[in-house]
Length: 72
Image (cartoon, rainbow, N blue to C red):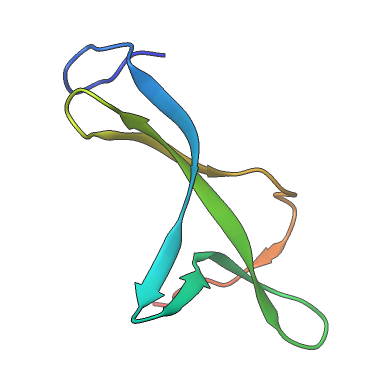
C-alpha cells in the first residue's frame, strides 16, 4: 500500500479508533440500528508514518447492517 499524499510505503495498519474524555475512553465508529437499540461498529485506520496521512478507515465486521444516516 502506498500513501496517496507522499508516496511512502511506511504504513502502519489496523490502528483502532477511540475518543478520550479525561480518564474515560470511548470507542467510536459507525453507528447502526439493531432491533431494540443502536450500536457502534469499531473503526480502524491505516496511517502513513512518514507524513501522518490517514490512508484509509474501515471496519472489520459485517457490512450488511441498518446503518444510521443523516436524513437530509
